Image 1 (cartoon, rainbow, N blue to C red):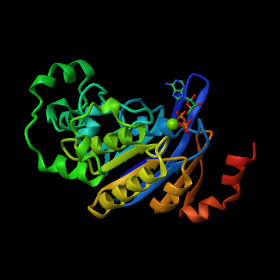
Image 2 (image 1 turned 180 degrees about the vertical axis):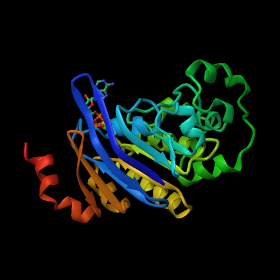
Image 3 (image 1 turned 30 degrees about the vertical axis):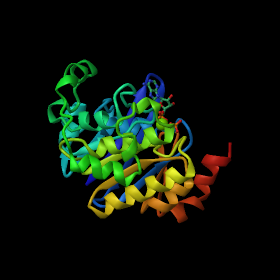
Image 4 (image 1 turned 90 degrees about the vertical axis):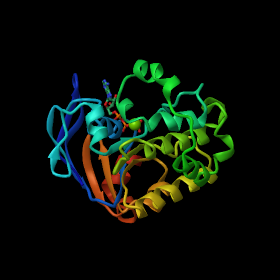
Length: 249
Ligand SMILES: Nc1ncnc2c1ncn2[C@@H]1O[C@H](COP(=O)(O)OP(=O)(O)OP(=O)(O)O)[C@@H](O)[C@H]1O
Ligand SMILES: [Mg+2]
């Protein structure tokens, strides 16, 4: 579904990604791990069109998407969450989700989104109800998103991606479990599994090994912008190069 071929990204003198190649097959959950600063978020930014490659190619369903702006990438069916939360804290939980369903807002800037707020539908939506039920946040839907616990806000951010219009086929998650308590991490794991069973594909950046072990079919390990290992999580975990990258320095 997604092919990264020799992806390279520089920031001045820093080679943030150095010819990284791997694939994400349809219906799979692929983990992208590595020490801090190894290039994981940079990779998600390149895939989602937020930053430009310096070399290589990114293909989604056989078509090149590198060079497309974020809204065009989103329209093709790629959604993402951010390492740092991006919710509207003063809108209610439900309004945050409703906002994502506005197709013409896809990838638009903050001003456009805010200007259109009064027009955002607040009518019933069985789909939003179902999503909120699933993660146990239905009774919080009228509360300000900013008043929820950090873990709850991260679940809302995850639901936000699922509410995108058009619905994404490939979902990129940047550290969905960071700062989330163990009970809610389990909720998150169940939800990702649930949506994979319904045909979604995931690329997950995560430091929490339990999440990686529970979820991923394959793991790609980055270190200093290079791919140093790839394989099933149990195997990658024992790879000497991976242990060296995490614990050797
Ligand atoms: N906009 C930028 N300008 C300059 N350097 C950047 C920029 N974005 C990332 N970098 C650098 O690229 C490298 C990779 O950063 P990246 O954010 O991808 O790390 P990461 O693997 O996501 O780490 P973490 O686990 O801490 O989130 C780092 O050296 C970082 O400082
Ligand atoms: Mg990061």
